Length: 467
Image 1 (cartoon, helix red, strand yellow):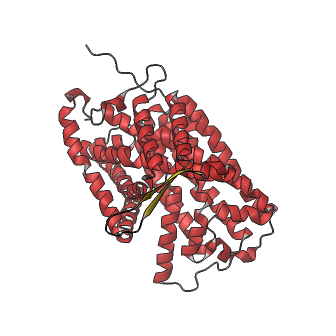
Image 2: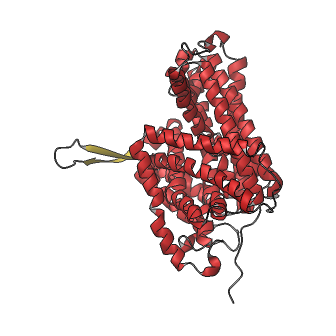
Image 3: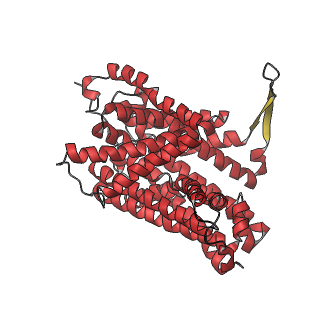
């Protein structure tokens, strides 16, 4: 007789669930992207249209995922939805892409961002440890690899948050609430100070409308929308910890829908203070828009505080990434479709300890070697494919399992989720057209999982395989 399997514990309440949604979406992108959006948008109205449409599309996705999360509050989120709605192979392909490249490269990227910001506060972090000169054959240009203290600092951050979440999901949730509160306070402080202490002007909102409406305006809008959706990304992290959410039938809709709306309002306010504080041309030319806005009303000495806010923001996103990301390889390992170590649950802390160590190790190696940026860009293409497929799974479950208990049903069904699927697929096609080589590699990465699926599927015990 086999021993009873140790399960994860429902230790994340409503505030922790909300903090995962808000704290993941509000990352470092909001401090940087408004300038890029102004540069490609060309006018204030196009930028605001991108924020609003991006927020609406994100809300449509959040509404769909709220139904899935409330009906199937299971570890792994999309892995569970795709497995049950479209079949085990689809769930595996998502989990394979997420667990080997997606979350580890994302965590490495966030940790590297934290280290770069920290180097401003503590210059020694950016100091080189050694420089390695590589001379390729056949007369190619020599390559210089610089290893600085920032890389070990990034690894240290990954290890720290892996350890925190190893000790318990409640502790991880409490840390997420605290960091999210601090980052919201930082963003709203900039907004308030910019409007009340700054020397801005409503004249800075010129040009409000595009100079010439037409195909060029549409192109500008789509470019700004792509940037906005990049900033909004992360709302689906909550679904990965579905088996650890308290009262999921109520907390999933509240956290996903409420959190998305709250974040959209914050983004609109922050963009507004950027245009109020600086002329449009200055916003469009800025590469560090938050720093430039703070400097406009507080002088050069405020650079320390905006950098500190970005450090806190990066840490909050990293904690959420570590907390939620490990649940996907855990769910796969539990079903016998991934490395066995990822299925281990700590008997005392009731956390997916094996998956956390696996994910932390992979992310740390990427952070040390600096090989994550290309992988992250590959995963963005794959991520939107799986967003669309997850909502397609919801449509199919409505038809094949109409009696499934659904405490929350997507508002505006089938139009709202249908629009999200069409938009997600359109964005995927747009990414493909803009970056065909990189997107093709991303697709090959997804399909490479089929070999491993057959291998693990053959080895999995019949009673451990997903239905």
